[in-house]
Image 1 (cartoon, rainbow, N blue to C red):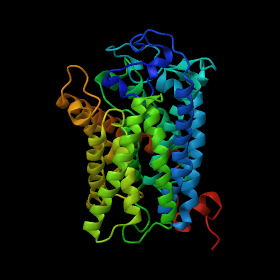
Image 2 (spheres, one colour):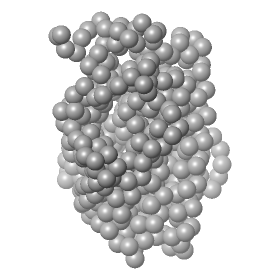
Image 3 (spheres, helix red, strand yellow):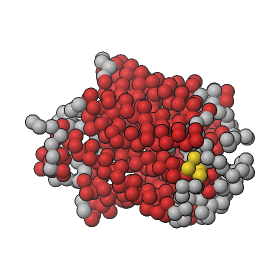
Image 4 (cartoon, helix red, strand yellow):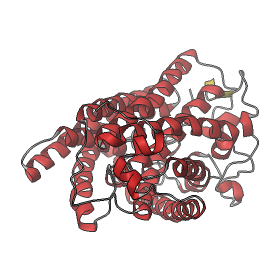
Length: 445
């Protein structure tokens, strides 16, 4: 197997290896198919898809009111289908093509991939990425492209038109997700890769990206009718706990699969994922217990997701000590962001996408720069890099992603609103999106 310095371990794809970029083909050997790695990556790919359908769909579906449960399930399912088609048409190419890239050189391919992989051109039965078929690698990365826009759904649940959702998600995927994925994971010549940003499995690409987009969408759409004076409790916390459990299990594919091999990196990623998630679930539970007097099912489930989010960027570089610290920090900070900060600022992020995914992603991304240190049980800093230096690089990556995503998401929303309108009518919102948008009921009353 390839031996990579810690900085290069923080890439869920070793994307440039798919085209045998000389700077990354460290062993200067022709890749050979490894059946063990391939078997693991087939499994990991299925696990990540399982995170969206049914995991995320149930997690979100249980938290909305009964009259909107089908709308959330439909949105997650439709996004899975739409992103799959767009990924094949051009998404894989724009995210992972290394055409025209050169380390240290700034050009269009610093920010977005080339078009040589459009319609999966060149992706054959025989082509390899590292030691697995490129077909498997492309499908694995497709599942990341599916869940990222699906995460945004929770922020505007119960009030966006279904037609507007499809247009918004398709454009957002194209102009926000794909460039960020390329800049972080694209290999030598990609902007944040060359900066040295560590993001093993998507803290920046997936969670900060989706969480910030969710907040912008919630602000542009406005509050749900009656919020915050009308009670809008979750209608089925059983669904939510089942969904959170599915996310927890599926996340092993998300994080351990990002090693793109069945190796020691995948093993440590699995361990730290479990540890951080458990620590965050307990941290949120005890925070809520102290603050509100009782620990809730919704709280512990949400805390677990916060831990999963925060360990994601660090899962390839942190050790067990780092996982514990990241888990506790994310559980407490995300609890405060989803309760006190949300109430103080008054925004209606329906299912706390910003508070969990953006805030958790930021916590994890910055702490990745701390717990990569070998002195703290991590994989070790790159040669010549200090902890403070790595923390600054992580912070720079976070700030760039925040700025890019906020601006582009706002522009997309305004354009879609201008053309077809974003929000359902008051009458449709009162009736519920299940009936008004899909003509169906989740339950027979």
